[in-house]
Amino acid sequence: MGFKQFVIFIAAVMATNALAIDTMLPALPVIGNALSIAAENDRQWIVTAYLLGFGGAQIFYGTLADRFGRRPVLLIALLLYAAFSAVAGLATTEGVMLGARVLQGVGAAGTRVLAVSIIRDRYSGRQMARVMSLAFIVFLAAPIAAPSLGQLIMLVAPWHAIFFALAIFGAVMAAWGALRLRETLHEEDRLPVSAARIFGAFGTALSNRIAVGYMLAMTVMLGGLFGYINSVQQVFADIFHAPLLFPMVFGVTALFMAAASLLNARIVGRMGMHRVSHTALAGYVGIAGVHSALAWTGHETLIGFAICQSLMMFCFGLVASNFGALAMEPLGHIAGTASSVQGFVTTVGGATLGFLIGQQFDGSAVPMTLGFFLLGAGAFAIVAVTERGRLFRSAPGESLVRTSNA
Image (tube, rainbow, N blue to C red; front, side, top):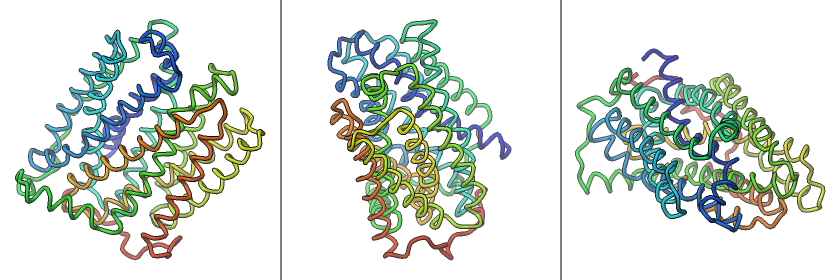
């Protein structure tokens, strides 16, 4: 693949996850009724079950990718995603749906680990952050369009068709990868599957202060995002009484995140990952504070919600690409395992925090917005400890050098 096709392919691989979550959000009430899930908060399990499968399985993919290569493991993961998307579409009970969603997430877990590993095989430093930002621009078209796509599908077909569309997308991606993707892990770099090596790599990934610090900061940031995803459909239905506006506003907020990724790709080479991400995180905390205050005092409106959420997602977009690159930067020699460990911790931890926030939904936006503020402040504290108080700087170790695997 040339550079442009590589970025588009990686972005589409990454989009499998967003599509699996966001396309079915408008259909949650209908799915809940069809599967006899009476309580609105209980329907959040359809999202959380997927996230737990997505996060939990990532711990295995890195070891497999380091041993057998990136390409075959990615193709198997995409086929699993396609198969269990179809099973979810055929579900007639809550148990079958939740089981299919867990296993759909297991397949999608490989796309997350392998996308990051493949990028890390080819790039490092600021160039890695730039590639991830460019991939994010294409990738973020998924959450922008996905809720509207799900709602559009429901206008012409039952909710089952949403999952069948995901199955087709997974199969197409597997075919594209089989035809065009070359292996990025050299034969001499493949590592044997051994307990000593695996636990040694895990130990390295979990003992590097910088990697662990940014991994934990990203975990709590994702907790806020997943809390938003769990609650947002209920917010529009129960607070604003405008469920039909949900896909549009959700897409607008995602558009701000995409704009942030585009901006990051342009400025990270000059300003550095530290300065950009730390400044954006401070902005996120400030806006979240205003957002939670509006909800707490009863001044939350649809327009105010959309503005605050859009600005927060803009900051989140600047944080996410850079935190991921900063966490991976010291671990290039064990990229597959490191990506697995980080994906496991950030997704399972974030899904748990997000589920706890979502379950507090009480007919107001207070639990969700307060969760944004507290978790954002927690992430800022973690970064401050990780960097020993040296924030908003451009670290001398950040480079534009591509690795020899490029």
